[in-house]
Length: 243
Image (cartoon, rainbow, N blue to C red; front, side, top):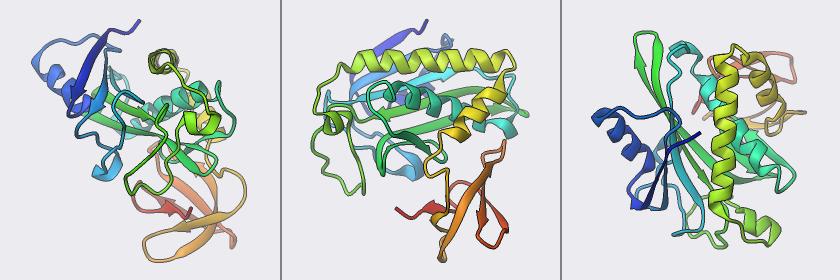
């Protein structure tokens, strides 16, 4: 089970949970969730837009001290699959855009920010921050392609019910990882990837090029194969999908 801390408003659930970890012993799977984040963060220091009380904004801590630092991407895979599986109960065409954005068709419905604390060659703890667009109907930021579950289905949802389902799935996947069953996690992640079939446009910061997803390395590197048959390896931020 998860221990829940509910805050009406907070600057960042990730920062709150990290501060808590620095100050006291925290139970694994502790969840900090809020109605409103004043400084919510996404990848690359982007802000995460969320209307007060409309969406899911939470962070969970796990202690994957048995996972080597160079294999930490499996935590991202677990979080992504937990969200993907949960949202797939409500709507079709949910995929994972490498490394860990959750998409409905060509639109982003969820962002994930994972912050790992390392000790020697292993992970001491991971703070998994998740923001899911649930009931918001209008997005005012300059984010290019947001969408919410309500916009897709025209229904209103209980955010706590969906949060509970995501948290439960994270625990289940993490228990699989503890049991040494990482192969199925990695396989399912690859099968869930956005644009996993066929050739698509990518940009490496210099030019657009066509390639297909060939593989994901255990480190999280994206392996793209061009139509000439050559494979290229990219770390996060080194390449992006052309949407």
